[in-house]
Length: 312
Image (cartoon, rainbow, N blue to C red; front, side, top):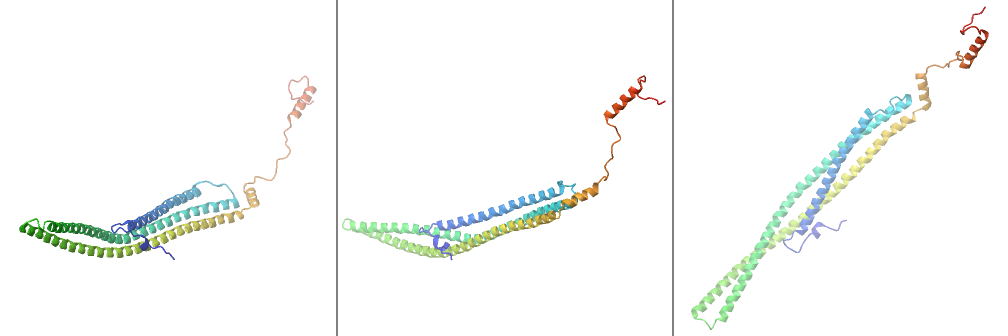
């Protein structure tokens, strides 16, 4: 069970500070950016998968691959090319699936952004109201402190000049003292009202801050869960693609098991054979035999100048 809670750890002793709130918002913005990056990753992966799938299909259809093979090996090659085409189709289908997952991630991000915006607007308004009231309270405090000093100075003037001034001057001093006391009472009342208003706003802000922290924490838990699930699903899709591809490759292996060297040799012989009889002994005499015959004829017919001799 989690012990750390947003509501317990994002405060500041400075009443007007938003450091805790800003820290949470920055983290949520970073999380949204991370989801966008994964969304873009899926889109880029989809482009790669689609391109690869199309190139595989083109390769299997257009590139010659043992096109003159015969019989069982030819059938294995046909299965091979068909399954490569199927693998390419699988990559194209995976690309479409990845685009759908990227779209879901985008919708999730935008949904969280919309819900978060409502809370942010409330907090921005209460921060503005709190800071404005704090400023008014500080101004009321400064005015109150000034009125206190004015009253003290008026009292000191009365005491200091009690026996040194005329009756009329004393009346003026007492009148000024009365005025400073009245002004002090007014400023004190205004200051107390400002403090009361500020305290009310502070309590309201704290309640809203706690509610915002709880909302943001819930939203962040949902984001992490969704992101983790999206990653898990993506990996499962890739694994499933590998399994499906291996099933296609298994079809090729099965076809290759049916490939028979003997049958292919027999098939080729029966298809292209030219005859079973080799030529007999050649009737053409070798050159040595011919020359010997010519020499014998010349010896028998020395007066003949031609190689042909008539028999008497």
